[in-house]
Amino acid sequence: MNRKSLLIAASSALAGLVALPAASWAHHAFAAEFDSSKPLVIDGVVTKVRFVNPHSWIYLDVKNKDGSVTNWGFEFGTPTSLRSANITRDNVHAGVPIRLAGYKAKNGGPFGYATTVVLPGGRKVQTGSAPDAPPPPVGK
Image: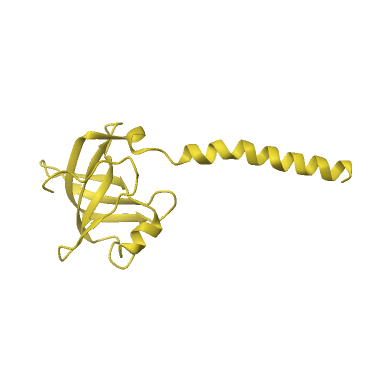
């Protein structure tokens, strides 16, 4: 191997080692962002769905007691786990009313982790896939 090839190979290996911690940090544990002591059940109308890795997201408008509306964002499982549960753009898209059960974010904002979703027609599906996430809130 000549000197230039050796330098390229070493640079590539170093770049891979630098990127590895960043990739593993990007996939966080449930407890890093969500509070298992703050369960919630929320009804709303879907405004946006993002089927992306490592976590999908769903956003919904939720009517508050005073009549105002807050847009909430919920972390779901991976696109593959959702697809295997038959959660697709065909049945979860803007305009669809749903009920989510899960847990609030630690940051106090309108964000959470969805453990289950109830679709129109009453079909209930487990949506979360974090291995350290608690079970769905009891009785929901």
